[in-house]
Image (cartoon, rainbow over all chains, first blue to last red; front, side, top):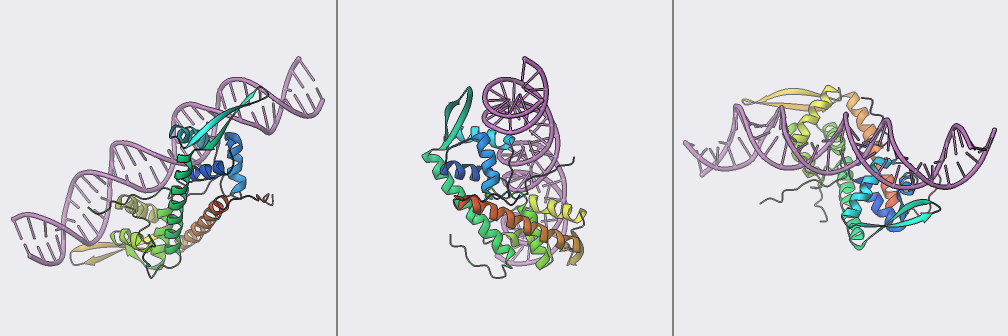
Length: 119
Length: 119
DNA sequence: GATAGATACCTTAAACCCTGAGGTATGTCA
DNA sequence: TGACATACCTCAGGGTTTAAGGTATCTATC
């Protein structure tokens, strides 16, 4: 009922983009990534573990990520990093994001005149 | 075959923002709005009627829009326009969008320097 | 050595949104 | 008459995120 939303709307698929970008910059493990999304977005996003972990598994199953098991004391960490396919997908996702942002900007800035997209 | 344009990801809640913005600029009826979203976004979006009509009804039920019935020949058109509450919501949604865009930009532009938020 | 809290991983039901397909009816044109 | 665009509407389905919960290890304090 009371859907106390921590994250704003407008974010379908955004976690995937952010995860690919952050892991491409630096391999990380899940728990670390959850916090990195918060901090590196300037607190704009706060995706929970229930969002991030399933995504990591899905992206790995798709061959976009690989995980490496590291032992720290008695504890196991799964460090994820991007594959070549993952970097290609990241480039795609960034391009899609550009189109979305451009499209919205066009509407918000009184798009009285529609300029033919560069595409 | 017309290139059946499926919409990209990253758009949860975007239709609401665009509808409020477009109706705030100029009152329109549903069918017209469906096309306006396509053209004014530079073909970036193509939300179908199954998305737009339910949204118009919901936004009207929330008091953000009002509809006026106009007869054209034998045909009825429901022209929607924003209310004061609708304009307030539009301002909110635009602000949320700014935050989202800023947050994503921060991550994409190598957030090498993560400035600890002024907590 | 007990307790509490942070770390680290994982799963699940529910809610939400958009898609795609379908339905009804009117206007226009050949 | 038929075909097509206009104009409204609904619904099942699939995909995504949330909120809540579960397990287990590490660290600190008392």
